Length: 334
Image (cartoon, rainbow, N blue to C red; front, side, top):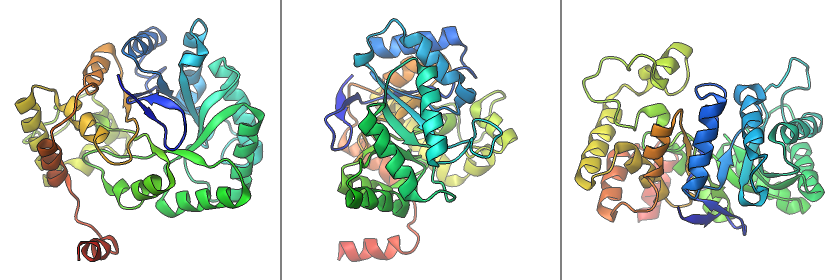
């Protein structure tokens, strides 16, 4: 597996990041450990979790697995923002909650430091300066090496970067957005901000809950029972059948299947490799429930789609630009 610098830092991370949201949920501890062992064996060093994943169980599983590992070989990322209790200060990005949350994550992860500490989403209730100054304190204390954000809009990310520059605080070095062949609005503002500011990009849901794995084909009337999309439909999650069962999705999947057949790769491998070829992207986050899914995803690394195949997939998945992006694109082309 190849390694890439995380934005404009000297930190080298594997070009695939292993997400652990399934740990303690779809994958029990034994299976999770096998997944972690195989990922590292394949050359992976970048592991992403969050305090809210299974209410801390995911971090605990990763922490117990790390006990007999060489800590310096691993890049461990986790997040803070969402509720971890019933108290009024058990949620958000206040100084109080961040400081309590980082100590709890350190205990669960069985480590003295976190390589990448990310705010899981924007917090309207807390002044941004309070959040950023607290994160800067954590970096200066050595408990955190780098900081990042997830689920920010373009103006939110730029504002955070500008305030950190002005105050001399540690800036966000990484963004974790939703980005895949079916969800490309990240390209409108977030990717340009990241490229301009030297921020790494580690997309979540590169296969959109299984939509891009080849499991879904034109003509299907409902998702297979027990799949992530089936569960999403019942739970109201964003990758639901009712949201993506449309002509654009089937056009993208048709082309994805065609390219995969032409080059002898699986649809999942092609979809992830397309993402690896996009400007600004550092490492897509792969989330798996078992070793079979992991092996398939690992096959996205170590090769590159041709320019022709990248162009075909990009064109079929292109989204009609809304205002003002449509005007800006026309002006840019003049």
